Length: 253
Image (cartoon, rainbow, N blue to C red):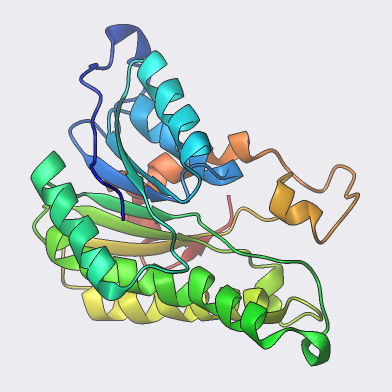
């Protein structure tokens, strides 16, 4: 467990006032040092949010934190490994966010585990279970722990990044692919259960992106794959009040 959660005291300068869609909000970015996670974190901070950066690789997490502070944003650090974290760890996370930031207005799940394409018949049982846990079970445990805090906000959002190409039942995607299908169901189910609450639930399906994770499945994709940086605005949109138009669905911008 992390020893402390720290926050930068820097306020966002007027020069970065191009979009203030998340002004006054606190959002948790899970997997904040990943390709999409760091883009989302910096975009959310630029849009006015205090961003909680959660990830397991502390040096990379620190680099995202430093970039946000340099750009005039506000950030909190929370190192945590989803693979080994328990429901009690997530309860402590929610408590620390409440004590450190005073509120929580959004959660964006970007953390992922994908060891590579393998036939199910040859998949290591431990690797299959780990992929299911990190990509699906841990996401839900964390969300469940944060729901009481999210419910206190007048408008809040839970957004799941979903690899829809892996979740269509194609061959060799293993536990990762099964988890992606499960996430789509989770979005629909959780939306139905929270429809009358201030908590909005949605999915973000960017499609093929040029990331290290994608490179484990495809060596060359030509112009098909897009840069993660293209999806910063979509992340901000779903976390902001404007994201209500995507409530309950999976958006492919």
